Length: 134
Length: 162
Image 1: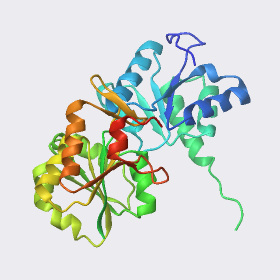
Image 2 (image 1 turned 135 degrees about the horizontal axis):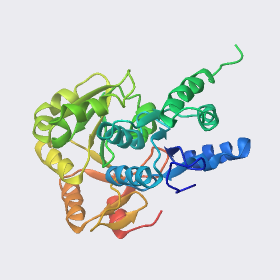
Image 3 (image 1 turned 90 degrees about the horizontal axis):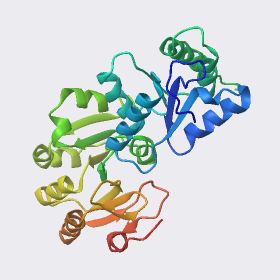
Image 4 (image 1 turned 90 degrees about the vertical axis):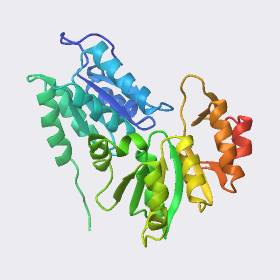
């Protein structure tokens, strides 16, 4: 986790929120694969009210300067909280249904703004789902 | 069929409800009873987009839910009814008089509440409201997910840690 304010090359580019240890696990995997976990901020929502989830996400966005929020489940309370925030703050991007392929594509795509990288990463994440066997 | 689960959950619609309970109950409709949500088109759209396409979501304030409860109860599909707070469920129980059990699924920490379970924190007023619900002949248990033990209200109020 990195709480540095954005605007530098080492600054976090997104917040990752999910159920249980999902977010921490995903970001840990990003770190293990490419060593770029510091581009992502892990946020736990365990035991929190909807209001406190929203407040916590807003605080982390403000503190880090991140403009992208990744969440796990479209029906999750983190997603609902993030949608309220995105409504209030144009220029933020929410990607729900995040997977490892999405995050890997996102952290490597530093040639474009984080919000643009998030859109591209979402497409990569969708394409990464495959079914093998019959 | 009709309502299979009456749940108090301050997160309203979220993963535990839609997936955790919705899948094993095969829920095909969800009644979200909340005075504020039912009065806001934006809030309703927010929650509508959070449920899977096979699940219908209905919105009602408490008074409307009392009036329409017989329709929910006779629906041929299995359903879930949720309130975001204990007071709303108490009003519903008093108005309907046909609810057999209430599930406390999530009342999370905020100022003035004391810890009871990992996912249940209550003020003294909320404790009294839950006792009122039980006194009306309704079984009150706390259970966040189907695989967890249903904790009787008496144990919840003792502040069992889990």
